[in-house]
Image (cartoon, rainbow, N blue to C red; front, top):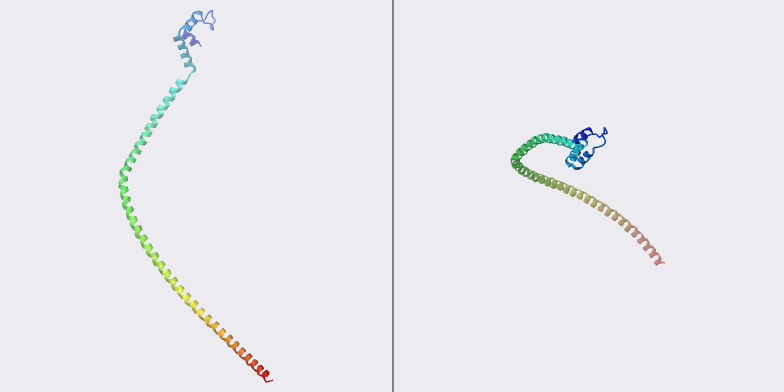
Length: 183
């Protein structure tokens, strides 16, 4: 407070420091420059934003400079790597195309060979399966013929028995009929 009083040229009246002299009131009311000085002094005493802003700007500037150096070195190394890669990519692509065409040709040949092997195996399997089916059918046919022959013999035997039985009955009936006709 003493600084403000000294800055505006204020003198205590009758030893009382809180009252301004009459001419001081006029001086304060009419002088804008002095008023701005008081506001400036007050803002310097109470408002620390400019100092903090200056410190922040300084810190940010230092940080950005260090970061920029670090990033520039990183970007330069990345740029070199990208240039080397761009120089090597066309030759690598050409090499890959050649190798890919060779691989495709080999795969086609291997696929063709595998298909032929598979066809032969399928034919052999079908041939052996066909032969097995023929043999099985022959065996089944032979068994069928034997079974038919056995059934034929059974039927023949039953027929012969039935014919014999009927003949015997017929001859008995004929005898009975002859006896009846004689009476």
